[in-house]
Length: 466
Image (cartoon, rainbow, N blue to C red; front, side):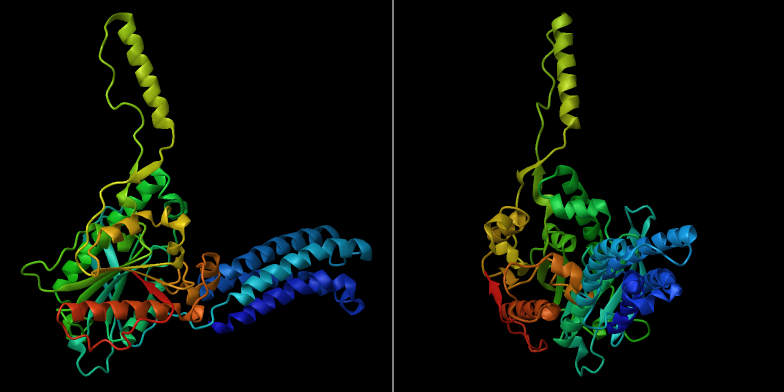
């Protein structure tokens, strides 16, 4: 992936030369330079299928598309030779040069520092069908990835951690985290749901940005949480059946039935809170030892405002009664047309199963505590102290416990934490795995189990816990 700088450099060069051509006599003689924006646009166009969605290249792509369109128009109008005066050319060329410099700077500064291809070593991939789905296709289709250490002498002792991926990026956004957890002694399992896990549209973005203040956005968030609860139900039933891993043995040949952890990002973490895990289920074939919610908004805990009286006024009879009913109906109609707001929280669940809330260090500031983190913090406060832990890493933004610092540095930079990271930002997936490993070892030890299969199970530096 690091070689992406080569097409980025060619795009920048091909856009730069036509802009500076009027300033240099030797370049003026080369009329063919005016065609360079066209191959620049083609390179930018094929870069996305070759490297996937690259947000840092998007401004350069838009610039190339606009410049190529302008050049085609001017070539058709004037031919290859642009005979404008030097003074006019300087005035017209400087703003495009500045914009090009900014677009190129984004592409070069925020390109991935490591290979971002999905891991394959020690990874089993399975495609399975779930139960009936609320989505239009009817049955849910899942692609499941299981990460394990093929060289482990005692693979069946490894704790199993099931990861419900973030809505933004799906299992591509937790691949490095899953690898880090595997290297620390877990067998990790993540998945993608076909037709649901994708780059979010405007509705999902509104849920994240205003789901705690707007009732309409909150309803979208609730629907997302319900879908993740559906995923969770299917995954647990699938795991209990001890499925075959592509001819390489069964799931619990590589993991322990007696030490299962569930971790969920955003709506997935909310699903863990709302599903009401409270201790072991009698007769269950697996034992859930701990839960992890990562940047989970808990939209379903918020309540929207009630507008006006719920019941019409008593019938007074005659014209006065008719007029009162008409006025009531009109008032209700106008009130229903008005966008509803979120007015507070409903009942907060009381957690007893060992639970880790992993959040950005933004949660340490008052304005965020009373905003996006309100429901989460109230749920943490209602939990049993010692069993429910709130952790935040210095400098960690809302997306930094996933692969975003590695895969999409620009998006990660747009949502920073408030402090200075204790370690390099590119290592934050490792920090996330380290915190989860520490929590899992603590939970196992508290429940009288041996945490020795977990390696590097100490709390990483720069992490605040409550």
